[in-house]
Image (cartoon, rainbow, N blue to C red; front, side, top):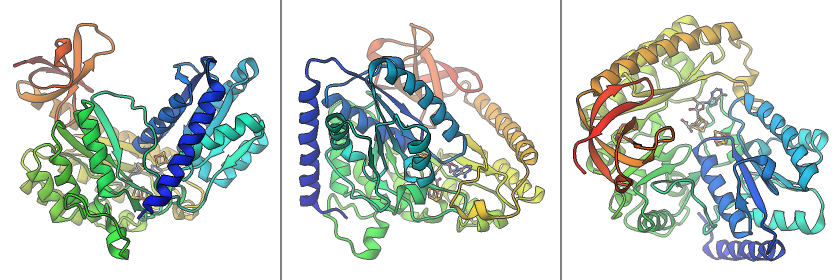
Length: 477
Ligand code: SAH
Ligand code: SF4
Ligand code: F3S
């Protein structure tokens, strides 16, 4: 795990750079804009970048046009992200010409050499490029860019230590994300993440529990534990005998859930993403026993075909997935499930795709995140010769979407008339008098409420359903 002393030295170095930049910026009322392009881990990284930027004297603005510091936190999970970044860089160039803004690009895409080469070549006005392993050095990079006026690249292709103690500015006041591990060791054959995020390494139990306690003190009610494969938390450390400080009996994902469940003030615990192959009985029991752990579990399927799953390197079959779902449903009362599915992976036949539809019908997911397979350079999937033509991918995607939407419609109808525990998140964006919250199963509910309801879990009777939200009325509170 991490060397505590080295961590302290590094964090102190960066805190010094924060002070230096803050001094340079003093009295200048500088602003920053950040665009977060990726997943929840990427969002959590952005919250750390915001924390650092604000301590260095920048105030957040919503428009890139008004920013003295422009940060892009990139993602490369699918193809379209590249075009989007290049479009945004065109805009950023104009802003830089006008107000001499500093432009910084970080995140997963910067771990791809062809991308950084392209930026050097075609977008030479970009000031800082930083990777996923050097996020914590943002203050140092920014200081150097300001004081030397030189373009800076700070990207490591080996795994960095997890640096604790960075400032953080969170987006929300009720819900917070806590990253519990970095990297991924699974190498699913379609996926770029293991190449850009490096090897799996878990944060120390103490750092996580103390962060959650601190969030509870600040009034946060819902915690989402984040990682690419959360249910293998501490597995690498346990297998390799890498030492970590024992804390509150935490030695696995199941024991972590139990420890977080004990933190006073927290009402709800969610986690993304677990891997079906690592869903051990102790995790099922922990979900069942822990009253704060939501009974909605995200269980990425990817494909319902055993053949495709094998080539995807997922390490479970259709039957094993369905058996796991059965076991979970038997053991966890009121369990609901959501999933991720990729259509059009190389070699996927009509029959394979029917297997995916079959699993979707059988499991009856609460929510399905559907993706069309996207080739990623450097992954085994990209080298496979039997790529599925675009028109077939799209046809399959539409069929899956139709099935999923009809299932969601049906499920939504079942909510009407029931009373749901809803965590009130705030005023709804479109109507002054209505509030929004979510059920345990993560459905959005809109209802008439009062300011003091925010942050409370209330009983709400569901009155009507719409595709993406439910309408309700408060029963108590
Ligand atoms: N670690 C998580 C998810 C990581 S990425 C997990 O294993 O579930 C989020 C989702 O993006 C994946 O679950 C997958 O469905 C999708 N995805 C990943 N690579 C993709 C690719 N090359 N093309 C299309 N979708 C992809
Ligand atoms: Fe990608 Fe698979 Fe790792 Fe998820 S588990 S991040 S899909 S390689
Ligand atoms: Fe997340 Fe995209 Fe990176 S999905 S881990 S930001 S490639």
